[in-house]
Length: 153
Ligand code: FES
Ligand code: FES
Image (cartoon, rainbow, N blue to C red; front, side, top):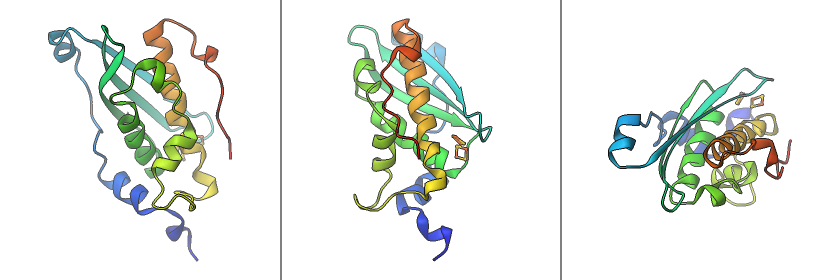
């Protein structure tokens, strides 16, 4: 048993080939009459950082596109990628209910086997924190005001 085997195939695939890594540009968002949110979050303990982009339709508060950039480990990249997938199509109010558990579950190959070893569970928390930051920016509230549903490893 090596740590190598403790990662799901989804994590391995997405960390090497994320689908939503990149940037959303203000001028494109302006052309469509939407709102751009860019939120940064850094994890104190490991120094990793993530930047989340949301293009939001202000008429419906719906996130129509999402991308990310990462200074993170492989698990942070895979977590960020599923985070953007989970955000797209949701309203901002729905997206803020996405938790780190939702992110980790979305990375599992089978529902009963964790996607990452215990040491890497915190990497999905960063995805959750940056969503709350983005939602706070869009809604004009302090991100601390959102209910904490983080389950820390
Ligand atoms: Fe990596 Fe917490 S130590 S996100
Ligand atoms: Fe830092 Fe994974 S070790 S986010």
